Amino acid sequence: QKIFNYDKFVSEQDEAYWLLRNLHVRVCPYCNQIYTVTLPSPEELREGEIFKTTRATFDHFYSQSEYPYLAVSLFNLIPSCGVCNSNKSNKKEKIIYPYDQEFGKDAVFRVIPVIKQEIVEKEGNILNFLCGQSDSFYIKFMGKEDIYLSSDLRVEERLSGIEDAELRERIIASIGGFKLEEIYKEHKQEIRDILRNRYYFDENYVKTVICPMLREKMGENKKDSDEVDRMAMDMLFFSNIRVEEWGQRPLSKLVSDILEQLSELS
Image (cartoon, rainbow, N blue to C red; front, side, top):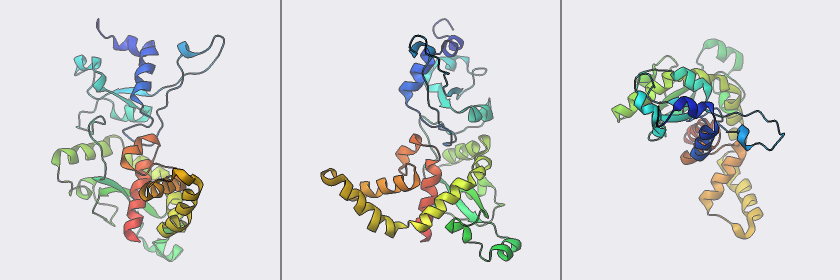
């Protein structure tokens, strides 16, 4: 506490703001659904200027109560949204450590239909959701190579194909600890938008209409074909499709995983 007083660190704000800005974490690494933007600290305001400050919370990956010496480690401070920080609290399960691990494409979002007789009678086709015309679907985590149509399978069964046992354990603990499936089922409207846009603007449309338009607009600054394809998809879905860019915008993993699933189905 004499060398690094954490309470002073967070209460006086300027050091906390400095650290958050230099980490460049724009989206909560636990849920990928909430921005963690940092607004100016009081010290940065011009004289007479009034501005309410806000910043992400710091989660102690290893709790201060059990590991007090790690309270001084910057590698133990995870910029996160308040919801995830609260959900994690002092849970002892081994969750994903964002500085060194990720879900990546080992555990992916998958949309599956609600298979019920009343849905068939009402909508005529349980696959209408793939066109964004229905919200009769579930959003679940599954292994990259797997599609399970049953909504009752436990996440442990759905992710049993992840070969790295330690990673599998951490991913499953993160899904449960941060209530990710419960949270993401509340994003049905955003998911419907993804499904609808992908239905109307399929890969053929992107390659034959949007990509040539982008190349024409860029003129001499033309990029390679793959880069133009990526720019077109990012533009259509207001997201960042590449794995290494998921931390730039909320819901990027969701968008990337669903587009991948639809591409495999087409």
